[in-house]
Length: 105
Image 1 (cartoon, rainbow, N blue to C red):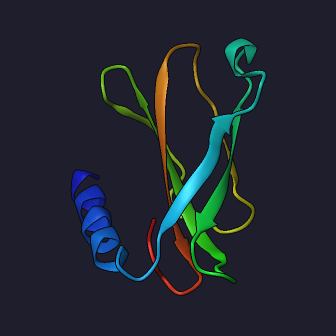
Image 2: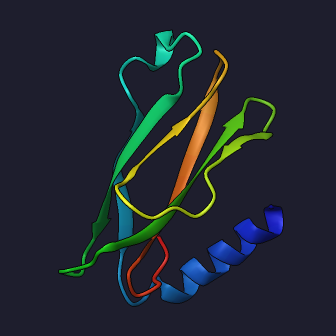
């Protein structure tokens, strides 16, 4: 898992000069604090400084306070959203997405 992350970061660095990819509004749904054991639904908005850039796929990871990965979506395609079953607590979440041409955020 850590190796995957390092490889993804290295690849992201290689593509950084061709276009600037980012993310806006990466957040859980409004019911998150009181989700009562229901899956937490995350949404995001991919951004790019290049016109006609399309979302090719993405991966969401969620860590607990100890730094342990508690959820990993794996590589997904489709709309920019994902649901994860989480116990009540504090979490950090991260996202990586790539374009239809294989450029990484």
